[in-house]
Length: 223
Image (cartoon, rainbow, N blue to C red; front, side, top):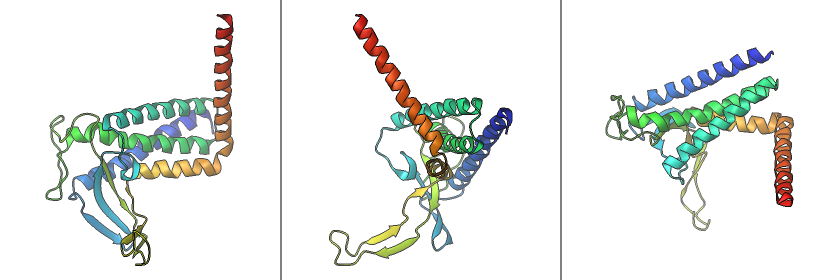
């Protein structure tokens, strides 16, 4: 595949994944009450929750810091992806990097704009659109919409188990969204199928570190 075709493939894939992610999130947010569940099968639910933090509902970093970190990370991934396309990287590598980029960007959109354009979600009512700036939160502090829940195994711990005996055990308990899935699938696939490119990236970083150290040593010796 030519570099031009690869570039267009990356652009179209990013747009397709972002649109899919946002359509799902907006449909859930504007049609379901917070914490409402729709059972698809015994092991799959559409379960509407929101979170302030990282993927799979994790939250232990300041919201502004987290959103800014995400923006910086997406910018770095985008620059790296552009360089890989210019260097004629494998189509698979470009596709997986594009999935990673789109997944990371998808949750940034929630943080940046959802607080500005929606009312707060609640178990009592369904959220709705409002004029920009009249939403439930400010810029960069919107909540991320999650909805995919796969309780594959629901059971209880044996009574003889210390600390957790008799308590409910659920596998797999995280609730996530389409963007999270893009990130997770792309990372796993990169580790499985793109080891050569990742090894080259690691070697390049090590070489840059060595060159930086040599430059620093040279400046010190000159002074």
